[in-house]
Image (cartoon, rainbow, N blue to C red; front, side):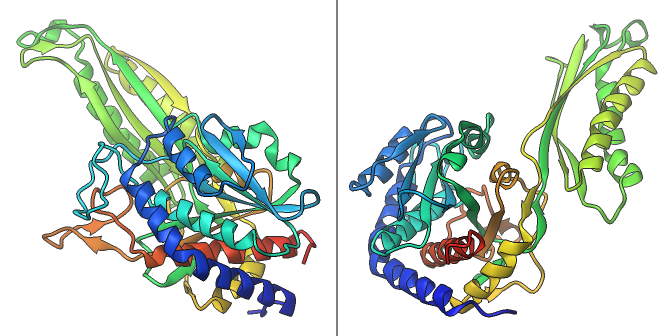
Length: 402
């Protein structure tokens, strides 16, 4: 590992000291954000709460309810960071006295990311920065249309001459105290599909004069699993998951139609294109062989999230210098994140900050992202802020500003 330059080490040390100084306020802010979550597309109260916490800065509205603030030089190159405003439609079960009670929950750690980004922005505002720090508080990470895609399309990255984008995400599948970067793909391309099968309705006791769509749906579901196991290279990760099936209304009526809905996750463009075509072909042939008709709709979502190798090389030693342990093997998953849209237009880095898994009361199942009991400890705020800081310093080096 190449150790950081003296200039980079000094800047990171100053940012770390500033983060530690404002950490008590950051922890209070995290609790307030956690207690009052907002769903995607309705994040205005969360955005307002954050803006009130940085009153000296003039925010720029982006992507509807989102906003950005810039710290440091008004012109010249900058480094952007992204933190997500939205929560999930999850009823919280953590039992803490600052738990949410409105049917929404920051079950994906976005409250931690927001407080960490705020802490870095506050620390950076007291320094003479070598490059601008553009903090993007982004809406709609969890839903479509993607907030990240809208931010990129708005042109603000070009307006601020953003030379690198930094993301941080808590991750219970990484041990607590460990951080992971890794070059190349770390999250998957995320697509969705809807399949509707049209048959011929009738009485359940006379199936021979109907075309029952339900067995057709069942055959398609089984065939979808074979597409992964028998048409994708087994050393290349990919998956198809059927998450919803709808058909019929009562016991003795064969319905006219039924539908299924699911997701496609891939790490390679050619696998993505292959599965899109194969799903359509499978549904069509399976239905026609049984006298039915299938309609297929595929919705292309976020692309693969790929970390820039140059940023990894610059940021990893800074993370190590901050006292954090680097993962021996980079964390990669078929989860998805719309931070991938930034990575399509600027060198980008997503750092996973380990929180370690909790367990449910019977200890059989992990408490992970999107679980009603997932609650990263308060130490995750500091470690996430340091990861943002290391990313900023590495980004400034990549931009030639440091």
